[in-house]
Length: 307
Image 1 (spheres, rainbow, N blue to C red):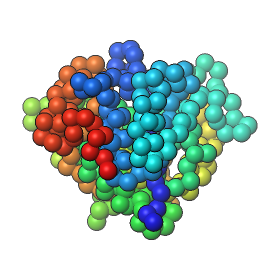
Image 2: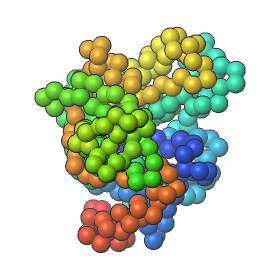
Image 3: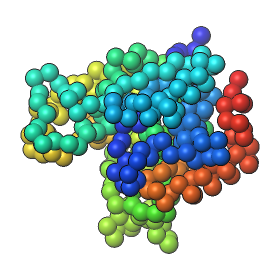
Image 4: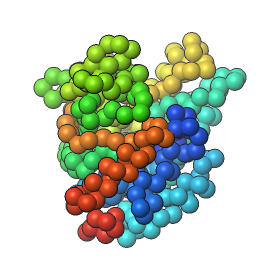
């Protein structure tokens, strides 16, 4: 019997760059499916047994009405469990305090940690508003069901040029690698598409660079590592930037990597990423999904092709 695996979908983002509303709940095809639908389709097809949504309490009802209830029915047909975790500003280490006036969420590391009581298998982490492509789901799932040491992680490596928005700047984790393993990931902000590639703050960036899109494959025990890291974050970082410090998953993994505590296999994919970072992205995303459906990558009736 194949090892059980979970997909954790980070959907608690406030969508500030989206110009209001909850960008994760934007429909992108004629049947009002969301980007999350396609990720869940690909996850079920790849063999994941459990879907964990990380959301906020204040979007709970809207989220369930837009996708949760429907996805629960789809997953039940395929023997896939659905669970919810809630990211909260007050979910912090024992003895710690939320700085007075703090409004910014604690970041993606804490988002994963919010699901700590639901994770007991190897798991994959993705963003709700990103489309990753089928290949990455299949390849990362294959890694997760293999036997590994608890210190062995994996990451989907995308080609930078396949991940840029036509409508504004993006942040990407630009990766350095050796023999297929990550040696460094540098969170790079303000990356914009140019006529001959990409640049960030007038510095040219090779569009063929490998980047992280926050798609990670992690062992179940990594939750404990994240918990210890969150305590260290409060002990060492929050006091110096109480309003803005964030516990970010790629930055923490990079710290572990440089400390020799983990290895990260980079699983390359040449699939084209797309997502709704800006409202103006929606039309192009709808067009891209239309092409995937017309070319037979997905059935017109999504989920109908799942065994």
